[in-house]
Amino acid sequence: MKLLLLSNSASTGARYLEHAVPLIGKTLSPGQQVVFIPFAGVVQSWDAYTDKVRDALSDLKLDIVGVHTLADPLAAIATADAVMVGGGNTFNLLRECRLRGLLKAIPAAVRNGAFYVGWSAGANLACPTIRTTNDMPIVDPGGLDALNLFPVQINPHFTNALPAGHQGETREQRIRELLALAPELEVIGLPEGNWIERHDDQAWAYGPHPTLLFKAGEPALTLAADYPLI
Amino acid sequence: MKLLLLSNSASTGARYLEHAVPLIGKTLSPGQQVVFIPFAGVVQSWDAYTDKVRDALSDLKLDIVGVHTLADPLAAIATADAVMVGGGNTFNLLRECRLRGLLKAIPAAVRNGAFYVGWSAGANLACPTIRTTNDMPIVDPGGLDALNLFPVQINPHFTNALPAGHQGETREQRIRELLALAPELEVIGLPEGNWIERHDDQAWAYGPHPTLLFKAGEPALTLAADYPLI
View 1 (tube, each protein chain N blue to C red):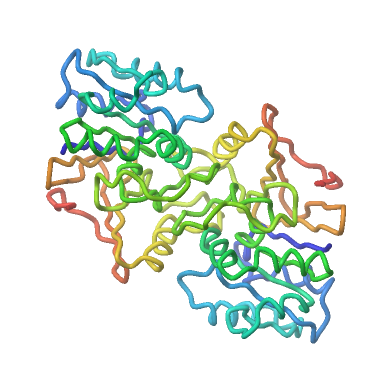
View 2 (tube, each protein chain N blue to C red):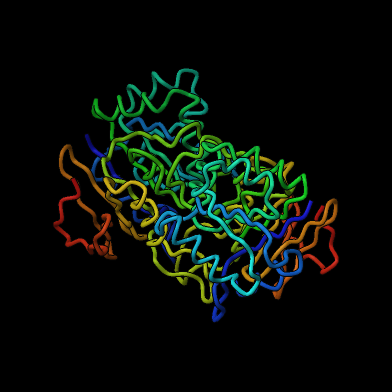
């Protein structure tokens, strides 16, 4: 099983998916088949979203198709070299995946060798649930359970900063609320620019910023570069 | 029907609920019965949360009981002078209210004359749904539908600022995602320090900061002081 889970699609001053291109290129070769899942997109069309990703990854010369355009999406996922899941609204992403039977099809394909790439909402979708999303619940996803390809909950776009003068909860406070209700969980705070790679039973976090691990009743742990995530 | 819906519980430099005390005191008198709903609290006990609210409102000399301590909460709500719903995690609040039958009991009491006071999550709960919460979905609320005492969706703690360098969605972008999926909705961006008062079929926003109204396909509207919200 091979996963690439990115916190975000573009950091300040960088092009869309710029930091993802070399990471994806380590695994995929020109001509390989990629099924793209655009359902987190709600203010752009799924066609436009797929085009945007195809453009961003054009140097890799992959064969990228939007899952929403396929007559038999489940068959295409089953034979794809990779499944890519884009960011946007996690609730809408989960709802559409559930309605279309992808919550079973994607894990089956990934366990069978397909490379899973997800950023932001797409990284959250790989977790057991979407209980660590930052997004607004714009639609009922029919349950919070997700793909369960990665056993630890990821909080993408992790930052503990608040806008000046703002009294809302910090991100850590939000995560602590989850751990108060579900102390058996662990949560990875994945800052923008960072990513996680899973190769079968091993996984590490990478990137320019410290990655944090939150456990109930313990202070946040800043992970060393070689910290095994699973 | 009388509602007081506050964006938040405490602004910078102010005591907990300090700005709410005179607003609540306009309607309630010493000795009146208040049922407090503490279910948005997840990192403090419901007893501690109730004590904190009782302390904050002590000058008003109200008789405040936590709904979780009552043998017959539905009967107490039906005869209360006021129902107060505190902030915290909106998903947990909605779930507990649903499980305990309060999603019917509270609206019935308020339509029968009980004063509804909610801040933050408690303001969101008064809306048709919690689709405009900023909170993390730490638990499945069993559906997003809420009390529907106020017909417009409120986004509490509204700010459009992001921490410096952060690439996540702004609050307006999140609200625009909702309006893309549900263009029939309107969303009030209620900044910290502001509140809404509803008296039967009339409602206005108050407070030191501009309140915004978002509609699909239109720029955000900064509301004049006398703008009728319903």
